[in-house]
Length: 254
Image (cartoon, rainbow, N blue to C red; front, side, top):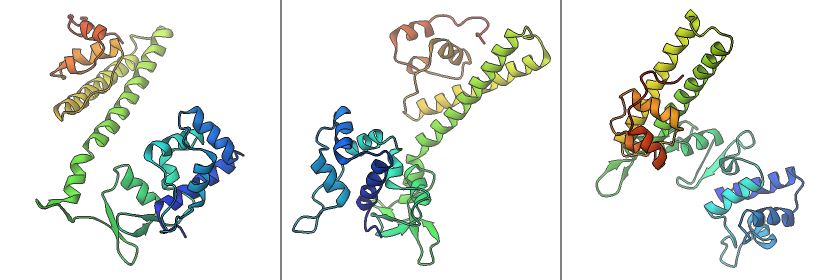
């Protein structure tokens, strides 16, 4: 049984390396191609085997930068090296010196679940302990810090729906049915998703977060909705900013 997260990572690196038929020398070469030439055969050996020094500490741990490189080299999501879904019943969580299910650990790491303790009967519960001298609730602090995640997920979903509607309108135009009732329904649907995207961007900006960069035409459409109060903060490209400062077209392009 793994005693800590480093052991889990070491085991997963070894497993995925073997999956690809790579030796440690091969993996070291792949890491070097990605600029991490410090991940030599010897370093990878110490990482994978968990060799300890005289004090019992690992001779070689993995930095977060190195973990990202190794994950890329092995073509595996980085988080899967830490929380291997479908393989282990429990993974060690260093913060609590407990073992929890990998899926729960995964959800905590991605912001879907708050910091979690586990009862002796295996039932998880949110950590409501206080932080520091001011007594801030850990759960409340978590809720505020996960706002960017929730907003970006909503934004991704709405942009996906917007693109689907745009694709359908392109199809209707191609077959010469742009004036059909169905096409007009899609026009209204697309406008709905466009306004939703603009609304989320406004929430991002109001929260002090940066909005993603959009292509010129979509940026103009978003500004034309009138929802975004600071269009100059929408993007950073100077050429596109110049376009945004012009009068929007009478009819936004489809």
